[in-house]
Length: 398
Image 1: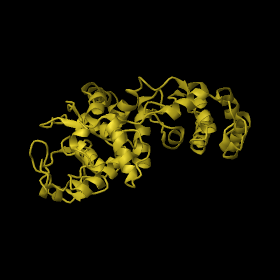
Image 2: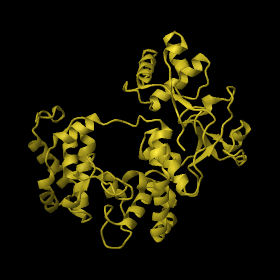
Image 3: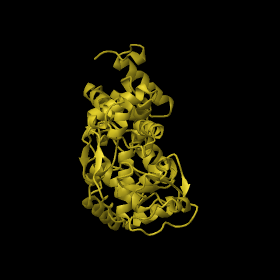
Image 4: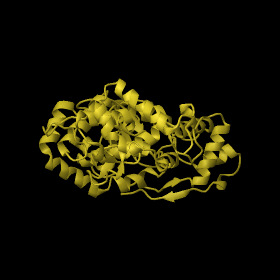
């Protein structure tokens, strides 16, 4: 193992000794550090996994079709019935609907069935020694020691994901220490084994940490006019218009019913452009993007929450939605970079930076500015014929 350059060449042992001193300085007991020490070992395999992880690159309907499948909706509803008292208490105290908590619970661990099988302290300290996100994971390691010191979990119980997340809704230790609550009254905050503790703690994090707005919606499926003249450039999470304005522009519920004619602000969200599903995203949608900044994940989590709450499944568009193949998406990102846009890594994944750049170029070329890359946009930016970038047609998941 080579010494990490970000620690002035210090060995892992020297780094760990300094980290333990930092923990003592913020009040962690020597007993907790002694108990945790056998688990504070370096694992290069964890660092390799962190450096090789892939972001969400799937098309929205494919990812949502798998992750927000009917069985997960039904499991969410069943858990709400099983833990009715804890969910009711959480909504009363924190204002977070049961369906929102259940959605994250289902997506993160299938309600506790898949929490990970790796020693979390080993993951945290390995990522702390690595230079990529060293300071962040030093803080996470110290937070894990605080959890041990508080008596919530023993070092041996700290088993979770390779990325150091713990419990049935996969909290990082800083979130665990800050937001976990004892909802079952046993004197411990156990997010691995106690359903009530999971429910109360997740509600506390969403309400306090992610600033949930009590009594307000988060996401609703809508239908936008299939009209090139529609102001597609307004379909952006950074733009909010009153529902009355969206109504004026021709946006309705999927069955054609009118939206409420009120001033509640909402963004028009088109995860697959103007030919795919359409949603109104409200202020509370920000809680989903703060939980996970992948637009695919956050939209899926919000959609699953609506399904658990009783909403019907997404409607099928009248035509298939074309997605550019990976090589064409990478080429587009290269073309956008040459045009002066910062799209981050050239990886063929349509993140927010890429979507914003696509929208700007669509506006430049007079194309419907719905942030969804098309063969025509690639051809315009190449300066060649449209046929050079044939898209792949993908069906919309039911």
